[in-house]
Image (cartoon, rainbow, N blue to C red; front, side, top):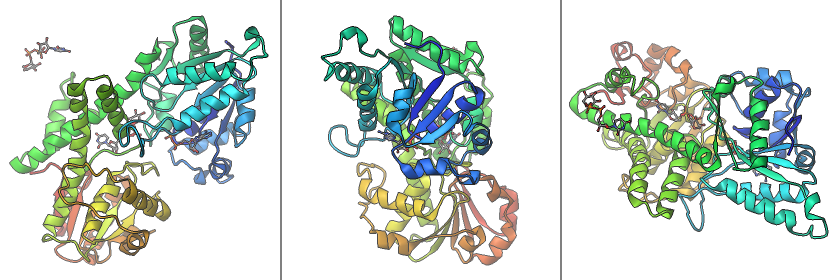
Amino acid sequence: IASNITKIACIGAGYVGGPTMAVIAKQCPHIKVTVVDINAQRIADWNQIDLDRLPVYEPGLPEVVAEARGRNLFFSTDVEGAIREAQMIFISVNTPTKTYGVGKGMAADLKYVELCARQIAEIATDDKIVVEKSTLPVRTAQAIRTILDAAATNGKDTQLATSRPKFAVLSNPEFLAEGTAINDLLYADRMLIGSEDNEDGKRAEQALADVYANWVPRERIVTTRIWSSELSKLTANAFLAQRISSINAISALCERTGADVDEVAHAIGMDSRIGPKFLKSSVGFGGSCFQKDILNLVYLCRHFNLPEVADYWEQVVKLNDYQKHRFAKQIIDTLFNTVSGKKIAFLGWAFKKDTNDTRESAAIYVADELLQDRAEIHVYDPKVTAEQIYGDLEYLQKHRRNDNPCTATQFSALSAVEIRSLVTVHDSPYEALKNAHATAILTEWDEFKGYDWQQIYNNMLKPAFIFDGRNILNRKEITSIGFELKSIGKG
Ligand code: UDX
Ligand code: UDX
Ligand code: ADP
């Protein structure tokens, strides 16, 4: 097992692999970093001359790529070549929630990770450190280990046991948040490395710690046993999501009682035991991690026969479903109980600002519910493409979790044609808003605050409703123009 790393490969050029490797390459000019993906288009996009068109939109990323690409950062489709060459291989492929079979809708789908492990085992001719970087359930490292060991023996019987390559498996969860990825990577709160409890494991742990030590202070590099590291990732995301569901639960109470959820959040956040961050009430959390990780945690708890623990965490997801549903229902109720044929403008589609990622975005679910009532939805998002928006809605028709307890109505699946006839995507927010019955703010993009709301008001139908799912607008200003403003958690 190598202790001085000069060649790194990363399998998976997505939201995690791309930015993470770009920053490692930037901070470690002496290490050659090769990012590979089976998706040729994605790799071509990473190699774009025009840095504004990288496949991942992330503030600061173009500058980092500009500095390192072609120097010691490479994007390629040659997965085998990269594996063969590297001393250290990050597995950064997607681990979505399973949509079929055992654990459907709950467990993480490890098929892509498994394929990577098999491929590494097959190709490796020298020792490799394999780093799991995707979010994975506890004990995935063990699965990788089993595959590597089995495949290493398989078909190589003629080789002497001593000449077979050795593998060390590390867990190195990524805690970056999208929209702030570069900053989170450069100034990480901590880097967590879990290793196997043996000599090779320790050596691999040291090798990876040395890579990060090029820019992360040593005291922020935390080492644990491998299972603790894996579970820490799930737990961190579960705690963060729980804070949002907790404040969103209180937002519903605020609306009934006349309290203001932002005032409540501010007041409790000043307790140093609670802290001020991550207490912003919203239309509901989205993103590829929170729901997936919690469902995964729930699945694990059920598997280990801990139903009370499973139910406790599952409630965080149910409350989030409830929050999205509450928002959609409020729009329908306010618009005199029907949105059929009415023009509803959506400002924002991404799951949060400063990203083009839409996975599990609340906007998708709110739109879906309004479309059941045949609303005409007009979307503007500064970074999300029309094809992405249509794709998200089409995907949901096939994979709707039909156990959602808060939507009493049975949803019927819309065809692609119906979706395209009811949903229009605009390049200009003012076009999206023209003659609309209502505006719904789904993402907290900064630019929304600076719009000419007087002009928007003049061009909307009256009464002009705004449903501010992110509480970004100034109530005084907006209502003095004449809007009817509905915010989250403001009684
Ligand atoms: C999250 C974790 O923050 C990160 O550490 C982990 O590595 C991956 O998952 P991410 O999903 O990229 O990161 O973004 P995050 O900022 O956590 O936001 C998740 C969702 O919660 C977004 O939809 C956001 O709008 C919402 N949110 C966040 C709130 O509604 N209120 C808040 O106070 C914070
Ligand atoms: C609590 C609140 O902290 C305080 O702000 C409020 O005004 C009154 O209620 P108190 O009940 O006196 O104060 O003590 P606290 O330190 O909060 O502990 C409450 C219980 O939680 C104790 O049984 C304590 O042992 C337990 N606890 C606390 C834990 O089990 N783990 C912890 O990490 C913290
Ligand atoms: P994440 O948010 O975890 O980074 P993404 O879906 O953005 O998830 O990225 C994962 C990437 O991994 C995708 O670009 C996908 O094509 C790639 N991928 C999945 N399986 C493999 C594989 N076996 N070999 C190479 N790349 C893979």
